[in-house]
Image (tube, rainbow, N blue to C red; front, side):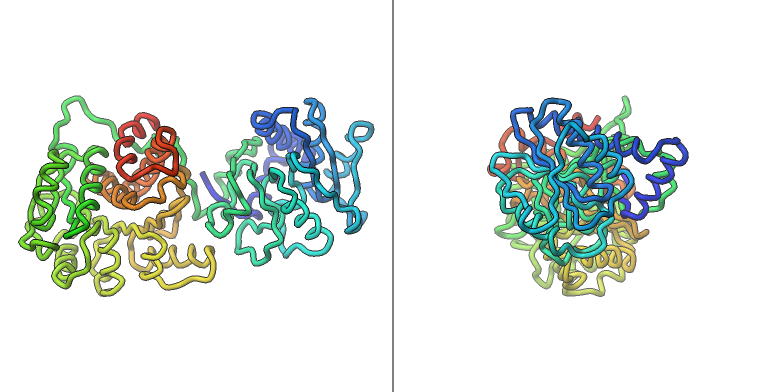
Length: 498
């Protein structure tokens, strides 16, 4: 699914209006119906609803939603902030349609800002995605009152005060529990800094013309179930272990063998045919006992990796989980990435080693997959002032170094050397637990070994990892979830997607 800036979304609206053809007021009606369908499946008519509108098209949406909820026997209070007599044409039409149905309370001064009784559902329809400057004055007074009311807030399309495509400096922004957006997600939804201004967000289809969406260029996309399903490889009837790839994982050190075990189990559950674990000798008995399906290639070092063997027979290589940063390990990593000569996966201490020895970047095979969490990425790319600048650094780093960067977190972002970025739509906060990154490394390495191109190994691996986490959360809950739970649900994640 494309992620588009507000200007391009307006282009798609205009194209749909012209070529469907449909009047703009009727497209607004369709959008309001989609929002109302979402709303009525979650909130019953027992709730008192308060709708707060501006006088632009977002406000027009709000008026239409108020009318539709009233028709469905919801108790609706309606307010419109009117600093001047100006209003959009579609707002005026919807205003006329409400005559005799719902009284519109006008807010023209600070003294008319409602006090917001508790226990209401407040619908925010003040500003849409076209906002271009910070909120101030009467609008700011209303937004502060909404946020301080303690009520559940639902924003139509985007929270009022939030910029869709760039960093929002002001804190005068509605803080919704839910955002219901039309057809196309906004880039702002994927930025950690905006979490309190987005809440849980949903996309509703309002029938914008698909050909118009396809014509708009974008470098930003959201991974969807349908896309990942279309990319999953099928097992042939006469398949055997040799046809599903040979993977080598270099992992573990004294006190960090858990990372190696998690990585190994995840690689196997993701479907690799043959897995070999290159680990220090201290982990030999652990690995052979806990992961009997994996072969073990013990290193000459007792407590950490010091060398590597023949890597030519392997289809994929993963390196980093729990390896530490001893000098012998550093030298081993430098040598093996050149000897392997194919895209590989580097995580954890492997990334920290690269941050300290940046010359390794120059010898990494094209489309090598790096899987940093934010702090590891900061060591690689430098500090940033806001999440939009972080995104710029992510795109630049992937392009300049010809690598794929999987920046982990909520809505994990996958940056390709082409400049494209894919944001994940699966996963949950319960996955913020030690070891889940090691699981992801094993999964992506496994997919590489099975013949997925690096960019697809990254995209499918990240999405599958998130689905496994979502399925695990349904059983364990989010708070008690641990990395091993994800591994147990990888097979179910495959089935769920298929």
